[in-house]
Image (tube, rainbow, N blue to C red; front, side, top):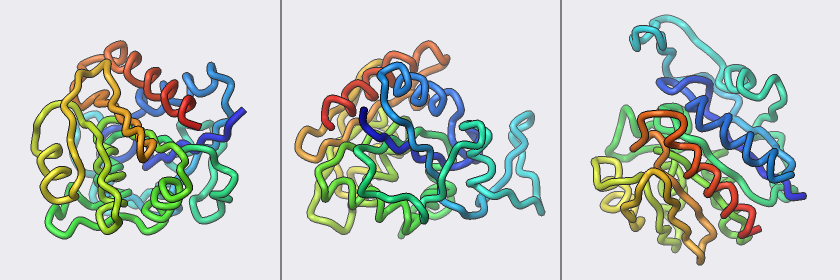
Length: 221
């Protein structure tokens, strides 16, 4: 049984982790008999969005770790307390939290910043030859974490789009076009990515790709 960290960025597609993607990741890891280690930075969210009307709720602060705990039924660790050496792999579900909380790509594309704890975790996993899975828009987080290293990751967010172009042109990664049910596996760096809701329109559409991502991450351990 491997220990797989699932890095969350809040709770909700517009300001945190995409809940369908997160839950399917947890489900397929559990079905595969892996030990799940839910993780999140203990920081404030950059925004709080009313998911009914998709408008920002101004003057409201929410803690990212507390919000992410909603998805994991309270079973979650702060990134600054986890023993990274005990992790065998990590997976990052998508959602706007990846580009609002883990990075600030949604607000500042030029000179995009990344949360230092997230960057250190991804770098250390790659340095140690441990698998990293990234779903939906979160491959951007992986590429940003490695931009100042000698690594050139191969990954996908699906089709050629603004995010794909940014990943390739600004983050020095190689973007591979793919279908929603497919994964791109960088065998050298042990990075597995799938488009999920970057392409999909329903939860059933993303299930195949996420299951394949989980299976491939496990194979690389």
